[in-house]
Length: 334
Image (cartoon, rainbow, N blue to C red; front, side):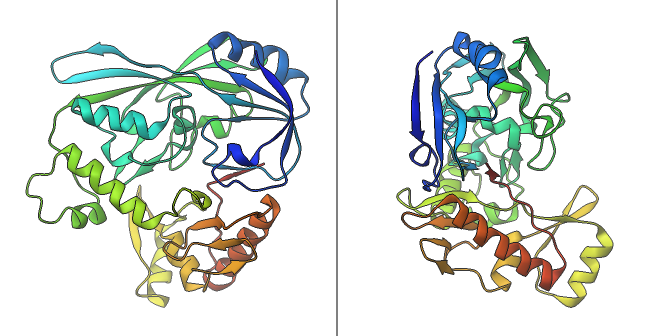
């Protein structure tokens, strides 16, 4: 397994912040590399970090061991008249997999276009957008236990998927390396659109196809997110989920507050909360809040990871003070 000493982690993340270095950095390019990393490298490291696309992580310090996941596979496992089962390697770029599925006429992930990062990160976050999420299509997740090296396959139920959540953030956090994800898609060109914002954006398209949805989502995300040359990790905070009585009380005080029913509770818009606190477009040196979407924190140049953390803490304090709502980071801070 290839490795290098004293690697700057900034260029390997989409935030591209300064101030974080890996003393030893490895490239996982085969399942044998993954097994060696899980059984021989990680168990003797004081701390470690596994990167894919680096799109949902904010490194802030020196880390003893880090690795880049580069396991590639994009293959059809089983195909029927109306269904196709596809295995995706953990190092595959997620957006490219969505693009491939749409080009083949396979429905189920077209609204997850332009989500940055790799396949291996998708189950950890249970990525979702515009009415779709990974758990809708996931059959199982393959990986390697640390430190035993045991190969395991977890069914979707065993993954305990939730809103931006899974078992990989809890019981298996730090003890499991994802190597592949298998999903089941439908063979159909017609799209099922239920998400209001997406439906509005498709207004005028009488019978949208999955290609229409894919292209529309790409346009929507490009309007909201910074260009590639600006460092960010997309949405920095999760949309908070609150009980019905709390939501009702907030609605009385703030009639224009967006609220969405969610599994017997109510989902609030973190971006709206942040914008109401006056942070949209705010800049602190090279760190700021994007002026087109208050949920996106950005690195305008040479910001340190710790500077991003300080601005995030300032935002959380302001939202808590005004609304009594505790924001939770979606980005993993290391």
